[in-house]
Every structure is written in structure tokens, then in C-alpha cells.
Image (cartoon, rainbow, N blue to C red; front, top):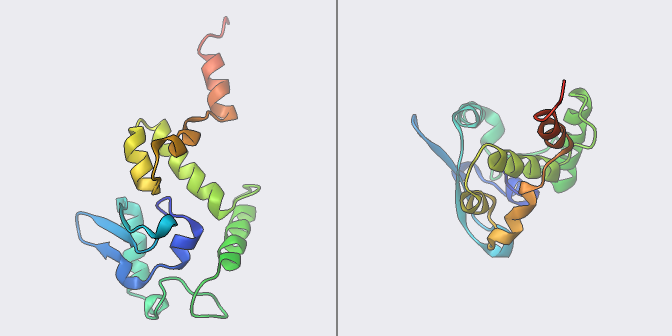
Length: 149
């Protein structure tokens, strides 16, 4: 969700989601290095979180809970991703894969690397350069541009 680290996501509280008609954001109170950051969220996520917040699912201390506990654990989040991945026929879906895909897609859509770094919570832009690495599909599309047939 919004490129958050798994630990950041499971530690969200309902009051960390700020939503209005025109914009929304998530407050990460203690990201990596115990740093605070505010991450803007797109309209579709605003709508989903807005609906979630008005249900009884978000009335506790934590934004996301599990079936067995008030707070979702890393293992619970991991298992949820794997389960959704299987249903969507996406092998190897994990919280980190979702984060990496978010960062990569931002770079691929032309977002400046310094902005991606800030959204991802990276202290150094060099860390963000991993998202500039092309995937198999991007490499195939590149060579197709010079096809001789």
C-alpha cells in the first residue's frame, strides 16, 4: 500500500490515514531509522481506505488486524500477500515485492528519482536506483522497437 514497508504498514493506526475529498495521505510515525514521513495516496486508495475506515474493521488501536489478534503481524501480512498472489496467478507475491513494484512503477512512469526516494522513505537517492533496473518485459519491449520485420 503506497510503497510502505511491511513493518510500517502493520504499525498503522486509523488516525494515521488522513483523507479529504481532494487529497489523502498516510502518516508513517516510525519508518526505517525511526523517521516520520507523510506519504500522499492516490484517489483509488483514498476511496478504499475511506470505506474501510467507516466499517467496524478500523475501530481498534491498529488500522489492520488479523482474525486472531488486534494487530496484523508480519507473518499475517506475508500470508495474505501469498494467498492473494495465488488467486491472481502471481507467483511469489510478498509485501516486499509489492513495495518494489510500487517504486519501479513510479520510476517507469517518469517520476523523478528524488521524488521516488522521498515517497519510499529512502535517506539516500542511491538506494532508490534499484527501481531503475529494467524487468524482462521492459527489455523485450526495448528490443522490439528495433525489430527488422
